[in-house]
Length: 544
Image 1: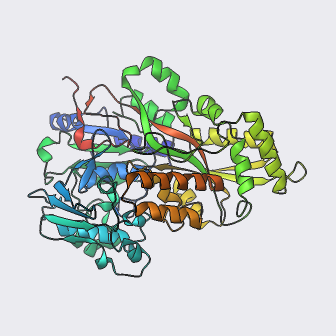
Image 2: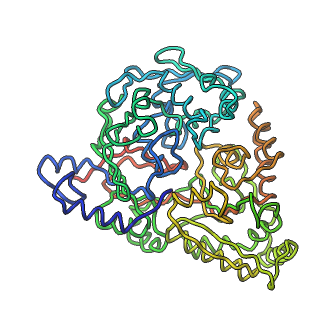
Image 3: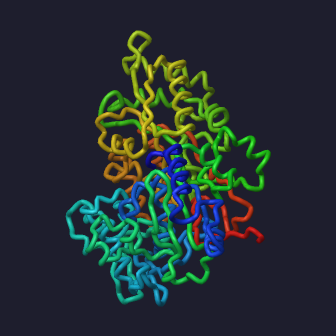
């Protein structure tokens, strides 16, 4: 998630509104024609600015929210959070679960009118695993035949077990039964690639005027630090069902700023609900507030590649034990989050989430053990641990960091420095692993399966930010991927979570809930555990 520039966004909006040109801003009507367009324009809060609009290179939720409107995968996320047909109208699975054959809809086209074929999906997935793309999501296709060898540079991308057997038929071969494959194929990283646009523009294709996409909308405008606009794609196969002409994704650093815009009528729905206003909203806007479970976790990561946390599981455990998660979720966040004493959230299909072995201990006993571990690691009142927490700018992140630093100080005597920065810079620093000690991050399940959370801590996974590496953990995941027996697969993943939690490579703090404000005239909204809302399914009914 990049920097949230609430003040700059507000200034940019004011500047656009006063310059007299361009599209009308929320609340403005230039003429009768513009009034009709404005009535069909959804103003959607989208939190931080996207890191990229390249489907195979993007990695943040803000980017994926937009990419789901711009591109369409073989499958999509349905209202219940499960996979449903999208560009593929149907599919069959071989009796051994190793071959998936997809049938594309008839007459699919790119936004520029070019025919869309099965080969374009092959190209997109080959690009995803190609080391030259440097995709942070390359390893999600690991179950596909030869994918792992390709990402390691041992085989060419053309060896990927994804082939077009006809203009409208696609065959995907997996090494082992992969029950989450259909959900995975709804992820934007598996979107098709338009060969001509890539050939002409290279990695710069993901910009207004250059991007060729296949979703319900096309990229129209992107004002960095302010907003991004998409307009209806008349070449989309189901354009007749799309009711919006345009969607404006508004980006803000501060949820309170977003809330003020929502109350002023400048936003039709929000990205989040600000914690400090939650009580007022619950009392005064109950019909507009949507709170529902979400498969995501807020956590602090340790940099395990350098001191003080490298080879210090006891110290990492001590810092985790003295965090009063119940207090954080009631006094600091306070919008229904659940304290996280494990990594995989509740609600994941066919899985029992695991917990730290001290999760049920009274807080006083946890503190007593933590102090012993702290001393064993070589720290004391005379020689306190000095550590830095880095986090992206934001009200909640700052309040949590202050509270956690206070808990560490009170229980152990830790001296903590807080460092807030814009998220793009934070991410670069984390990935460099030369400066960070403790960093704030979050993880949102890409599909409804525990493996989406387990894979993040795999030693060779591209977005394993902590640098965690445990051969036993990797072996358990590898064995789980080879299992045809669902019960055995589940047991292996649960054991892997217990192994990881014992190592304390990260510090889970709470499990998110979906929190949105939605105007009464916005129709088609459905809450789901994946927190996915396609703009094509929404429309405005103001009653005029």
